[in-house]
Length: 62
Image (cartoon, rainbow, N blue to C red):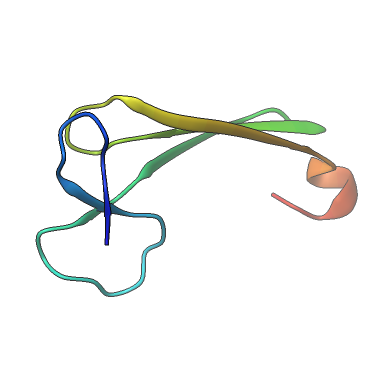
């Protein structure tokens, strides 16, 4: 199980079933053609990472 490097509490990426003590990582998405994503810890709100991809609506990737 993954842990936040800041608060050391358990986190998980998806919405799949997991132990009750872990919460899914928050994912904020911005953009229509170039999607930018920021992942943050649900416990302490620290940023865990960024990603981006090009395509968005044009490629059928919401």
